[in-house]
Length: 205
Ligand SMILES: Nc1nc2c(ncn2[C@@H]2O[C@H](COP(=O)(O)OP(=O)(O)OP(=O)(O)O)[C@@H](O)[C@H]2O)c(=O)[nH]1
Ligand SMILES: [Mg+2]
Image (cartoon, rainbow, N blue to C red; front, side, top):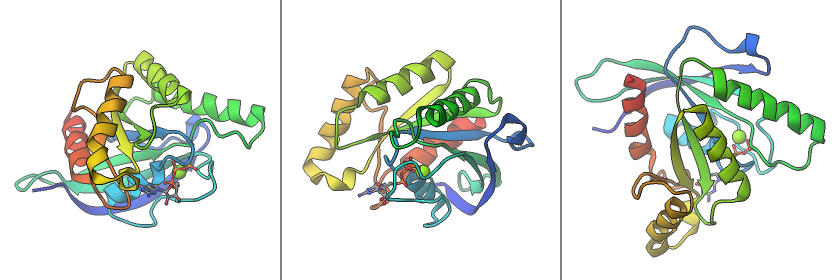
C-alpha cells in the first residue's frame, strides 16, 4: 500500500533561526535550482495542488517554509507527523548579490545545523545534465554529512523511452549508485510513491 497522506498544512515561514519550528519532528528539506520544481514536488507528495506556492517567476520561495504532514506509512501502521521544509532556489540571478548571499547563508546554516533534519531531497531537472550549481549543492550537502536523495523532475517533458536513460545519465554524472535517483514528474504524479517510500523509511530513523 502506498503511503497515505491524511493531512498536509502550512505551518510557518522562517527567515531567522529563532523562527525555526518546534517541537522536533522528522524533517525533510527540498533543495534545488530556482524554478526546478521544488514546491511542485512538495505539493505532489502532499497530494494538494496549492499547499506550497508554485510560480513561473523563479525565486518565488524566499524564506524557509515549513509544512506539517500527517501520513500513514503502511497498512497496519499508526499515523505519523513529519515536517517538510521548502527552501528558496539557488542560482537565482535577479536579486542583488547581498540578498543572494543572505539567502545562501540562511539555507546553509539550516542545512548544517538543523537537528531533526533526516534527509535532503536534491531536485534536478531531468531534461538536462546536472548544472555546475547542482554539483556545488551536492558537494555542499555531502560535506554536511546529510543523507541526500536525488530526484530528477519534469520527466513528463521527455519522451517516455528517453526518461530512464536521462536519469541514468544524471546518476553517472553525479557519481551516484545506479538506481538511487528517483524519477519524478509533478505533472503526472510519477515518483511520488517511490519518494514517499524512501522518506518514511528515513523518518523511522
Ligand atoms: N512539466 C512540468 N512542469 C513542472 C514540474 N514541476 C514544476 N513544474 C513547473 O515549473 C515551474 C516552477 O515550479 P515550482 O514548483 O514553483 O519551482 P520551485 O523550484 O519551487 O521554484 P522557486 O521556489 O522559485 O525556486 C512552474 O511553472 C511549475 O508548474 C513537472 O514535474 N513537470
Ligand atoms: Mg518554490
